[in-house]
Amino acid sequence: MDESAPGGYAAVFPRVLRRFALFAIAFSVVSITTGIFVNYSYGLTTLGPAAVWLWPVAAVGQVLVVLVLAELAGHMPLAGANYQWSARLVGTRFGYAVGSLGVLYGAVGLPGIALIGLAPLTATVLGLDATDTTLLLVIAVIALLVAYLINVIRVQWAARVNNLAVFAEIIGTVVLSVVVLVLWAHDRAGTPDGGHGLGFLTTTNPGTPLADGIVGGALIGIFTLVGFEAAADMAEEAVDARRTVPRAMIAAAVISGVLGMVALVGFTVAIPDLAAVEASPVPLAAIAGYWLGPVLTKTFLVIVVFSMFALLVVAAASNSRLLFAMARDGLLPGSAAMARVHPRTATPVTALVVSLIVCLLLLGYGTLDGQAFTVLVGATALVPYLVYLLTLGGYLARRRRLAATSGGTGFSLGRAAVPVAGLALVWLVVVVAALSLPDAFRGADYVVLGGIALAGLWYVTVLRRRLRDGTAGLGSAGTGTDRPTTVEVP
Image (cartoon, rainbow, N blue to C red):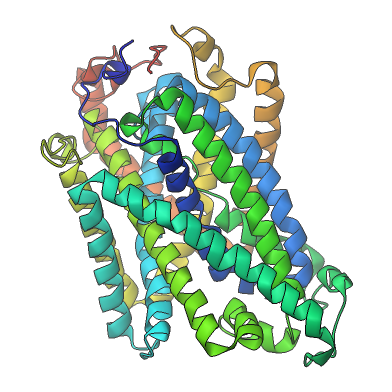
C-alpha cells in the first residue's frame, strides 16, 4: 500500500520526521532528567540509596513492553498509536477505552509537569519566590502557551527543540553525575558523613517497612520510563515509518534505561550527607551544590528546566495526534473540527487548541486546590500502565490478525513474541497492582475511575448511537466496519 495513504485514511501530514527526530521525540518524553529530578526524593526517603537497584528492574520490564509495542508500530504506524492498535486488533469500542485513558494521561500530565515541576524550578533559577502561587501559575501558563505555539507553527520546530533536548539531557544529567562521582572519589574523606564506600548503595531506610520501601524505590523508574510510544503517535509524519518508528522506540527505552542508571549511581554515591540530602526539597540540586558550587548548580538547573520544557513540547504534539486520531474516527465531541489539519502549517491546530484549553483549565484548578491537584497528577503514574496493559492484552488475544495482514513490517519479534509479551504482561500486572492497591494511592484510583466514568457517560449518551449507525468508528473513515480489522498500513 502507498505510504501516503495509511490505514485507508486520506494523507494529511507531510512525512518530515527522520530517524533521529523520532528517537529524540521518544527520548524527550521519557526524559530521564525530568523523571529522576522529580521522583528521586521519593525513592531516597522511602527505601534509601539502595533504591537505585530497582531502576534496572523497571528498565528491563519496560524494554519488554516496548518490544511488543514496536512490533505493533511496525505493522500499524498510525497517529494515536495505542488507540489505533487496540481498535484494529480488538474493535473500536476497546480502542475507545484505551484512547480515553490516553487522553486522561495527557490532560493531567502536562499541567502537572508545568505547575509542579517546571514553574517552581524556573522561579528558583531566576531568583524569584518559588512559593508564590500566582507567579508559578504565570510561569506554567507561559510555558504551555509557548510549547503549543511551537507545535501549531510546524512539527519541525518541535523536532528541533527535542533534538537539542537529547544532548542537553546527556550532557546536563549523565555527564554531570559522572563529574560529581569523580569529585567524590577524589575527596570523599572530607564530606560531612566522613566518607563512605560503594557499599553505601546497599543502604536502606530502617524506618520504612521493606515492602513499602521496595514500592517507593521502584517508583523512580516506574514514573520515569514511560511515553516512548510518542514516536508512534507521530508515525504518519515519519519517513519510512514502518522501520524508523519501532527502532526509535526501542533505542529510546534502552538508552534511557542505561543512562538513567549511570546518573542514579553517580548522584547517589556522591551524596555528602544522607540526612541533609533527604531533608532537601530538591536532593539532586543539594548534591550538585555541594560538589560544584552555586554557579554550576544553577547551570544544571537550567538544563533541567529546558528538559522539562522539551517534554511539554513533544507531549503536546503527541496528545494532539491522539485527539486527532480519535476525532478522525468520530469518537469525540467536536470530532469534525479536531480531525482537520491546517493546510499551511500541516498541524492539527484545533486538536492542539483543545488540548491547550484543557491544560489551562486544569492549571487553574491546580492553583485553587493544590492538594487535590497533586492527587490528580499522581494518577498519571497509573494511567500509562493501564494503557500498556490493555494494549498488550489485546495483542496477546488477537496477535494472529497481524500475521494475516498484507505486506511486511519493519520489526517483528517472530517466535519470541509470545514469551516476550507474556513476561511484559506479568510485569504490567505487578506495576498496576503496586500503583493501585496501597492506601497511599487510593486518591489516584478515584481519579482514574472518575475519568473512566466520564468516558463511559459520553459513550452511553452519544457515542454508542454513532457507532451503531456507522458515523463513528474505524468504518466511518473508510476502513470497513466497527469490527477488528486486518488492514495493513505502511
